[in-house]
Length: 351
Ligand SMILES: Cc1cc2nc3c(=O)[nH]c(=O)nc-3n(C[C@H](O)[C@H](O)[C@H](O)COP(=O)(O)OP(=O)(O)OC[C@H]3O[C@@H](n4cnc5c(N)ncnc54)[C@H](O)[C@@H]3O)c2cc1C
Image (cartoon, rainbow, N blue to C red; front, side, top):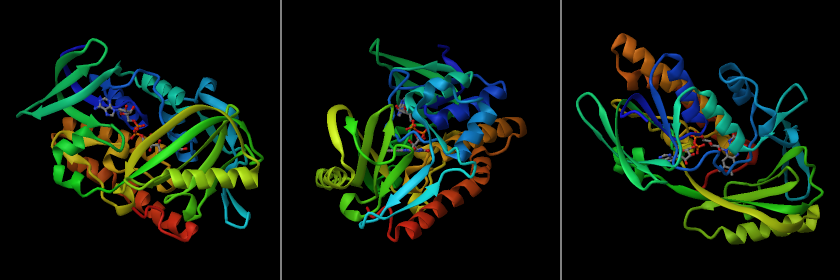
C-alpha cells in the first residue's frame, strides 16, 4: 500500500467497483478499502436486472459462471395477493430472465476487474480535510494497526450506513428514518416456482414487502419493518403463510442475516458529497423500489469517476459535475418508488 493516492474508495460493492473501474481507466492511482474479508457476504436476492447486466458487460465483461447459482436465471417477479392469485412481471423481454447470482462472487469479480489496488479487512475510521488533500485514518483489522493515507479525492461507497456521510453532515443523518431487513437461508422444500422471485405485498407480512427465492437449492426468504418495531411477528406470520399455502418445509438453517436501510431514495433525499468527497450507491441514497440497487450503484459509481476525471482535466467543480451527471438517475430512482407504490396499492416505505 502506498501512502498517497489520487482517489480512495471506501467499500467494494458495485458502486465502489464501478467508480474504481472508471478512475483506473483514466490512469489515476486508486485504492479500494473494504472492511470485511473478501469475498464478503452481502445480504441480497442477487438478481442482476437488465440495466445492471448491460453496464456490467460494457465495463467489466461477461459475468463469470462461478457467480451464478441454480436456477441461473429468474424469469420475473411473481407478486402474490391475499387470495392466492398472482401476477407475473417478466424481468426481460427476451424470455431468458435475469441472472441469479451470489453477491459475494459477483462483487468480488467486479472489484478485482476494476484494476484498482484493493485492501480488504481495512476500515476507514476517520478523515480530515486539509487545503489540497484529505488525510484518512484506516484500521488495518488483521494487524490491529492504524494507517494514515493521503488522497486528493475520497469516495464513499459504504452502502446505506455511511460513516463519511454521518461525519460530513450530522444534521442530515439525524433526519433519516431507518428500516431493518431480515433474510434467512434454509435447506428444505416448497412448491413456489423456483424460476421466479416471489413477492408478498400484504402489510401483515412486512412493512415494505416479503420475498422468497431459491439459490443453489436453499430457500431464501425475508421481510422488512421500520427500525425499532418488532420484525419477528411479521417473519412468523410470513413463514406460517409459506407453510400453509406453499408447503414450505424448512430443514437446517444455513444462514441468518440482517441489515438496515433508510428512506433517502423514496424521499428523494440524496446526499452527493462535499468538496472533493463524493458519495455513490446506497451511501448517496441510490436504491430503487422493491430494493433493486445494483443498477444505480453501478451508474452512480461511473458518474463519480467521470466527474472526478473531468474536474481534474478542466479544473472545474467536482460536486457540481457529479450533481449534473446524476440528475436523471436520481429522478428515475425516486420515480421508481412512486411506480412501486402504484403497483402495490400502498406506500412501500411507510417508516
Ligand atoms: C434483502 C435485500 C435484497 C436485495 N436484492 C437485490 C437484488 O436482487 N438486486 C439488486 O439490484 N439489488 C438488491 N438489493 C440492493 C443492493 O444489495 C444494494 O443496493 C447494493 O448492494 C448497493 O451497492 P453499494 O455498492 O452502494 O453498497 P454495498 O454493496 O452495500 O457495499 C458497501 C461496502 O462498503 C463496505 N464498507 C462500509 N463501510 C466501510 C468502511 N468504513 N470502511 C471500509 N469498508 C466499508 C461494506 O463492508 C460493503 O462491502 C437488495 C438489498 C437487500 C437488503
